[in-house]
Amino acid sequence: MKRLLAEFFGTFWLVFGGCGSAVFAAAFPEVGIGLLGVSLAFGLTVLTMAYTVGHISGGHFNPAVSLGLWAGGKFEGQALLGYILAQLLGAIVAAGALYVIVTGKSDFTTIGGFAANGYGDLSPGGYNLMSVLVAEFILTLFFLLIILGSTNFRAPKGFAPIAIGLGLTLIHLISIPISNTSVNPARSTSQALFAGGEFIGQLWLFWIAPIAGAVVAGLLHKTFFDK
Image (cartoon, rainbow, N blue to C red; front, side, top):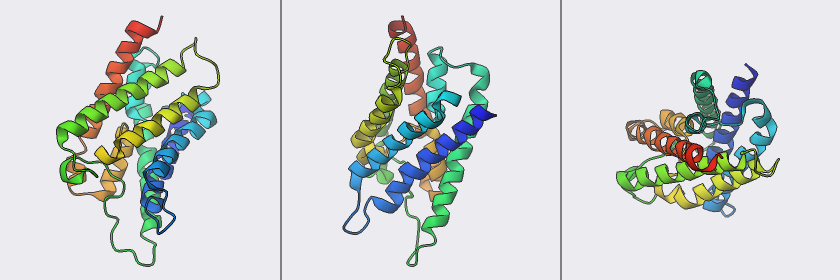
């Protein structure tokens, strides 16, 4: 239960902090934090919670990460379902909190895209399905390689959350214009549920591409690097 609660709170913080920065602060009049600020926010959520509860649950906060670690032989299969459910619940509760806050604005009219992920017309830069699929696959693959490498027993101790947080920041710097950056099916699901419409219809890609990239990374690390 401690492990599942750690995953719940870690994923909640990732969505509330990362997506919250995009919803509330990215384009705030005159002092908006922009793409760089949102990218940093996502990286900081993972960095801070990895140090806070990573020693309890491993600090996955992402179904793709859990599956990638399992494929790499670093996580037990019987815990997968519980972790994924805790991550989804944390993400959805965080999105619900964001919804309550954003709808309380004096001039509120619509939540708009709500930091949801998409391709085609729903891509911030108008990138098509194939572009988004390739980007999400590659970026999640490297995210898992960073996680697996920085947490390896031969890596310097105590620095893994920094590498992982900076890695996620870089991933967002690359891909916010492409897909609004997922690399995390729980984060994508929570925002799509509230944004609704076509975002839900496109959600499948933000499960398949990150999970495929993560599993390939796990197998690559297990085969070539975990020696």
